[in-house]
Length: 134
Image (cartoon, rainbow, N blue to C red; front, top):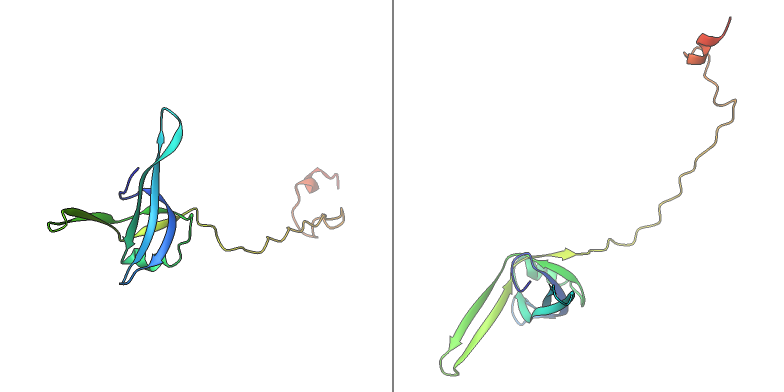
């Protein structure tokens, strides 16, 4: 799937950056149709900024996320003859979020009524009353 908007990714590490960002190592995979196995197609450290930075503090290893707004910057250093790529993530959504443990629901108590309790109250219209001879 690669590094793109709406891609699903696995988080491998989360580190607070020296600035106003988090360094998060993520990877993405896609299914090889011939072998029916998943193959990694992207694995890099990404800078989580903006809304993603706020959420990144809650991330832990092996969390699954869906990337939102993101982009890639490249910068070429002539002196070193090297190209630097920066992967920026501005927002993401948690995937497979497990809700906080909640108490088990109480079993519903079904009270069985006796035949006497099931009788209609005096004055209530009952279909069976029409069949009575008196």
